[in-house]
Length: 285
Image (tube, rainbow, N blue to C red):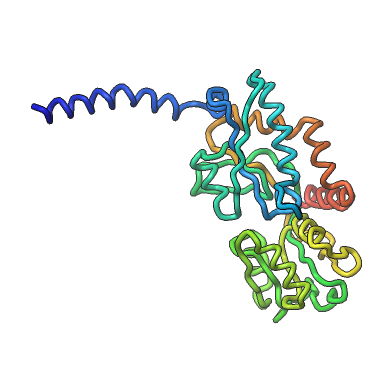
C-alpha cells in the first residue's frame, strides 16, 4: 500500500513539474533574461585585444567594453533598470560548449565564422576581419620566405586552430612547433624572442596584440608577414541556435554607432592596416 501511495505521489509530482520545466526550456533568451535579470556572457583571457588580463591581472579588452554597450542596450530593450552581468571565462576549448549548453547567452572573442555541426550554436554578423599571418624577427624576413615551401623552418602554431590547418596544408615541409592552452600564444611569442622558433603564426590582429602586450618593437625589430593575410577570417559572436529574436538583437547592437566607436578606440593606432586588410578580404571574397 505504501509503495502505491509513493508511486502515485511521484506521478503527480512529475505531472505538476513537467509543464513548468517545458515552459522554462521553451523560453527565448530575452524572456529568460527578463525573468532572471541576469546576462551571462563568456570572454577570453588570452586574446589581446579582445579579452585579456592586464599587468594588474584585471580583465580588460574590446569584448568587455562591448558587453558594457550591449548591457545598456539590453536594459533599454527589456525596459529594466537593473540587469546583472555574470562573466564566464571562455577558452579555445570550452567556448562552444558554454554556448551550446546555454550556460552563457553570448561569447565574445576571436571566433571565425564557420559551420560548427556538433554544437547547438550559431554566429552573429561579422564584427571584424583578419587572417593568418606570421610574427617574425625583422632580420629573418629572407629566411622565412612565404613564397618558398618553408622546408625545415620552425613555425610556432596553436593546436586545433584554423591557422594550423591552413599552414600544415600549404607548407607540409615546415617544422611545426605546437603550443596549446590559455598561455599558448604568450609562450609562442616568447619562444620567438628566444630564437627557439623562426616565426609564430596566428590571426594577424592577435599577433599584434600579443606582441604589443609583451613590449616588442613592431615595425623595427619584429614584423608581421605577409602584408595581406594568407586567408581571411570573419569574427562573429557565438550565440545559441534557433533563437531568431536573440540573433536579431545581437546583430542590431553590433551595428549601432556606439559599438563602432568602442571598437575604433581599441584599433586606433593600427586602424589604417586593419582597413586595408578588410578591403583586401572583401575584394578577394
